[in-house]
Image (tube, rainbow, N blue to C red; front, side, top):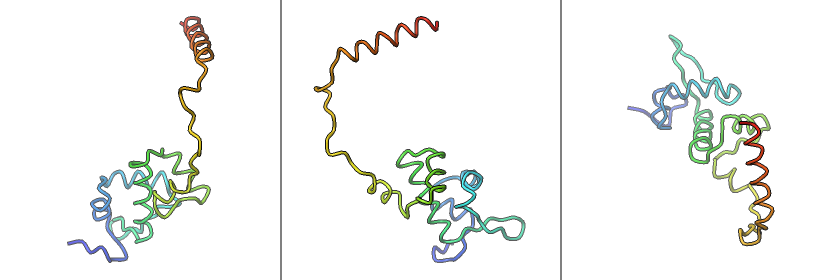
Length: 125
């Protein structure tokens, strides 16, 4: 049985908690070496600290729930802006007060842009 209050958790336990395969965790270790550094035990077994597991939950949510790329998460880590939760990051993004309406778009500009793109496509073919 797994104990969620343990200071160290095996890769198998963390994999089950996050609902991701163990090979994905090993891949994330290579992609995010600053944030994810498991302790290795006898025989090279990986053990994750509680803080690391919390970071893994945030990384998983950013990648899977909110659609960030690996490069996007790396940038957050590099800038020191990895949130304590993925929802915290999204709540800090300013929302524009005015959303442009499709009714206000001048279609003649769009038609010109489309025709220029079609001409460029024909030239390249």
